[in-house]
Image (cartoon, rainbow, N blue to C red; front, side):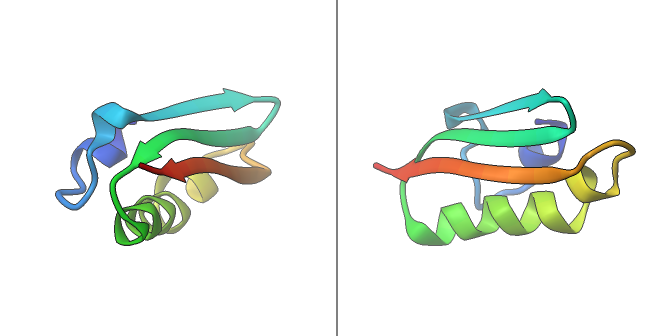
Length: 64
């Protein structure tokens, strides 16, 4: 969540992040496909995959 707060093209308050057994799940609503791509890009390039123990990132975000 901390990383999403720095991404200006993303409304972080509308996105939930859950981590369980090494799987990061993204949920919530985004206002555009572009915003969805920004979230995915932001998390796959920095914290999630770079964090110890993360095995997968699951995208359950929906377009509003």
